Length: 306
Image 1: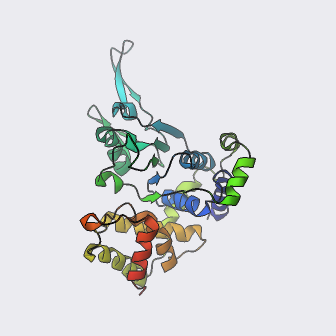
Image 2 (image 1 turned 90 degrees about the vertical axis):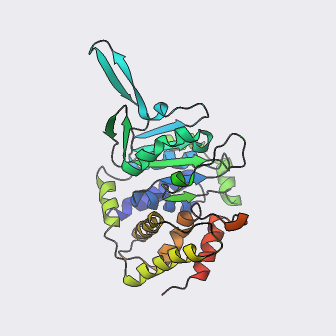
Image 3 (image 1 turned 180 degrees about the vertical axis):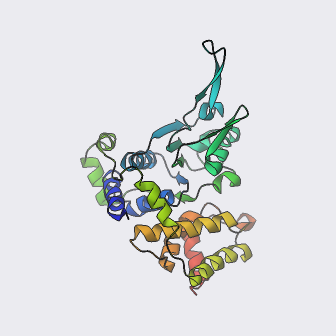
């Protein structure tokens, strides 16, 4: 159901973000699994463009929040202002009230402001001045952050990192993709020409379909073996959490759906593992921090498929 529409989204997004089909598929799998996405990379590699392109192609209401060091939680959630006509305070919703939020350079804001996203990401609601307000559905946060060694950044705490279902890195384009980028149309102009590829309501159906993708007992064994290995291994400070295990399961189902299958294979688990494990596993004893791909490759080689 909706497979042709999904392939159309991937094709059109690939015209904006050149040479990055795998990352586009992972970002889309993250959304179909009802998760939130963190993109960490150098400035200028297309992080913001990817988020904007997905919003256009999926027909989602889109707000961009540029995080800065002087931003306050109320700048995200909203604030009540006295209204003379009603002789009382009226709530003015902030930019968090949209279906797809781009939290741009999220690690440039202070931890207090970063925490304003926690309830929204976990509960799909915000509480302001004692009142809880629901956020629109679907609700998807795409956050970008620059590498932590850059000036003016505040590292995201583990509790915030764990709420992102996946973390991706785009990297530099290859030679051919960069040549096409240099010779092609301005990316912002190209995004303006994109039209929604998925009819209203079909995205929710696709998200529901993810939960129906079959997972055999042996696949549950494999996922649990990967999780348990990270908890026993002396290489990591702490292992993967139960939330991470659920993220791995749902992402594997979403990846299988994108591949046009109704059951999960070990290759699906391995495909999404870098995005799930990379930002959750910290090296023990001040060990060398490996890339997400290296971390996943080590796990895959250490844990046999049942």
